[in-house]
Length: 413
Image 1 (tube, one colour):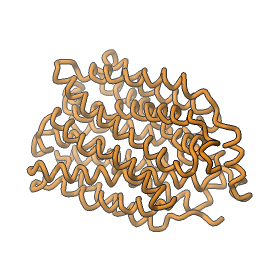
Image 2: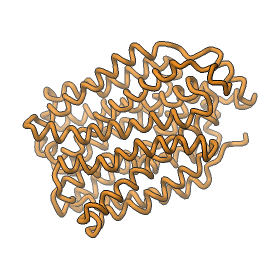
Image 3: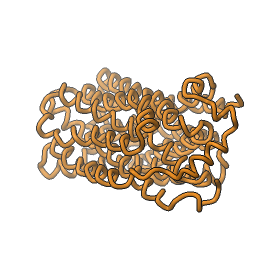
Image 4: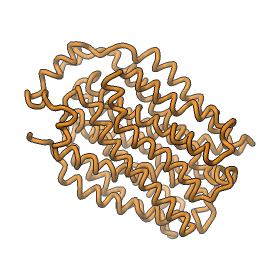
């Protein structure tokens, strides 16, 4: 099973398809973040209500992730990938026609949020069915890195399009073109099944009791629940960082830093682009240094987030541009460094027959943390007129996640 000759070089085409899909849905998610003030004005709502458009997206992600893995396991990679991309791309394309009503836009965001529920569930099967064990961390890290690629593109380009005189609805629609390209690529590439020899070998590697582990029985294992809560607090940080930091930078004082949408897109890029390097480094760390032990990378990630998130809300930091960028980079690194290790843990500790569903469960339940973080953030923004409390809560969430990870270990049952 360790021999790379068993694994087709076609695995890299599958990896590209997964990366493009991941990038596309996050472009659509983040596109409105740095221009949220303009979205709020256009829809005639306050900033707290506009923030709920981000929360609705993430809430739908959480709900669909829980059963999105079922689509992967039962109907295959092509069905899950195309369905996910259509959920994100069609509403974005139609935004110039439907984007005048807050209620309609909220429904559109809910539909778009379902996209990540399907796309995220393909990570586990892609890694475990197409890549040798020594490349699990690398493959997962590359896919997760494209969360940051998509976030960076969406956050950087949408303010530029808006500044050219195009409406925010038009900016969203233009960025949806990435999704249509990804759909065509996925339809061509993902139809090929994995090697039968690989699938057979994976099942033979499992202990008899593990081979009999069903999706229902997996919920009796402590690692299933502890791991989901670890993801819960990591995802709180991830989605609040991606969705709240750009409008925080753009919003005028005292609500935010007051640097405007274009500068917000550029500065948020400092935090999101480092996620690309961090995800890749996290994957290599899992493979080469931690030797398949997820705990160290997760601890490092939570510590960095805890130490450097709350300074982002301090005037002495956000008025010093260099110091502010350094904190953004360190928080972005910490949040993304642990992703490959968490996915690798799932791939190594559940049978291939339920890997998709367990990825869906861990990250579906966990993504409710992102929805809760954005909901709480929106409430505090509406009540205080400032983003600062929502930013400080990232550090508190990281502290809780750090404690939980100390108890996460493979089950001996």
